[in-house]
Length: 593
Image 1 (cartoon, rainbow, N blue to C red):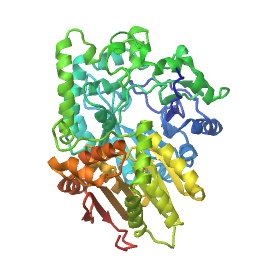
Image 2 (cartoon, rainbow, N blue to C red; image 1 turned 30 degrees about the vertical axis):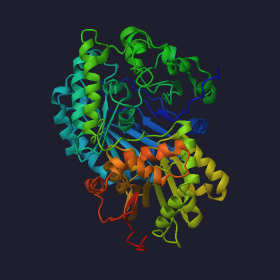
Image 3 (cartoon, rainbow, N blue to C red; image 1 turned 60 degrees about the horizontal axis):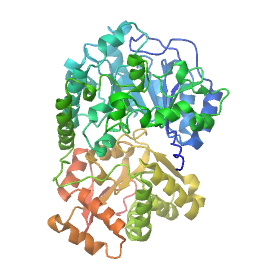
Image 4 (tube, helix red, strand yellow; image 1 turned 45 degrees about the horizontal axis):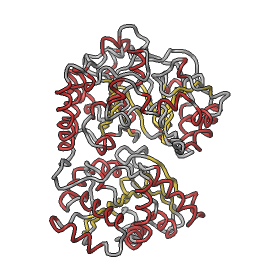
């Protein structure tokens, strides 16, 4: 049997400083003067990039305690890495916000206090005003802001009021966090989410799925037991892949010590030191990381659970409760031995409720989504064959349409969301020598194939095409950055396509261009006949891909409705036999595509 392939190290949480100006009871970080030097951060970047680094999360302490924080952001952003930064907001100024935007920050995660929660104990009197001031400054600077909210036993009963508070700040992106053990005695025991709380949060999450007030609602990876019973597509739609420690994620503390996770900082989980150890050797050879990656190492109910590979439970809570990092996540509702029948019955019910809230995806409905991302090697190979051998004319037509909206005589920056294997982008780069493209996809396999296509077919354009792994529903780019943005054959993968459309419009200049291109649902009961007629000469697996895509495609009214719901103005619509498009030409270049 061959050895398993080495996973990509996609995300690193970096404690850039251990200093903080507050004393929040939820904090697990000791307040010291330790901080990572720019030289050491550069060493980390250079060693992590060949391992697949896509994102860094700058944390603390309070990262804004560093006078050179914009330099830290730029050090990674210049290399094409998505940079996010977590802040308590108290040190945010307009000058800092502008500097972070200029440095290339992708997302600011702003701590927002839950109603009836004392996690900012020493700033309770002024916390509301500070949150409002920070949110206003960051949003005015055009930054993407996410509200980080810890869901606790004490604030859960009034959590809808907390959500209203978040929206009153003008923030439409939300990240829900699970309490973890902290340095403050008694805090975790008082606020931890019990089994009954997780049942309640599960119902709240179903309710949130159907709310239009939030563009994006994500969850701490340790909350993924809430998705028990939901199919894979719901995991991916929520941006949750279970415990990521050691799978595609590492933590670096303010002294340069490496751990699988910021909550697994014990001597047994110390992986090495950035000053002296090579990151590649640690990522490849660590027995600790190997154990965390192996679901057969899980004990008890977590080991028996059918979600063991996807969820894996929270290893830091297992260590805290049982002194065994591979033991049970004891508060998981589906390990509650007093409710085995109820749990078994609720699981599929929850899955269907989530799907129903997400746009009628339950079996028998009009749409049956394709997976997001398409990351299986066989899927990537088949998709490349489909686009290379059968869809060249369609992709060329899309590229020509975009090129018609792009001025020939000046440099422009384009964004492609859901680039797949990059065929449209290669055609565009060949047509317009002055444009540059940032192309994103959730699939690492698709991006790898796009990179191979670029190197083999248009190597002279390598400096003008940046390939990034990112989620189109939560784009890591500043507001108004791109001259034109487009997505082709992406919307039909999504339960809520309006979320991607809203993000695409946000990162495009107000006078910039937009293009949405996708399949058009046709056929009804005659769908298989349509597929057979259109795919004459296709191999069986390619015919199956096309059939699945049509089943996921949006009907005419749903395509238009999604874009209207997203608030995208000034679009013109066009429909073909099996495709549909909506576009808006840049106001300074009005060629009709």
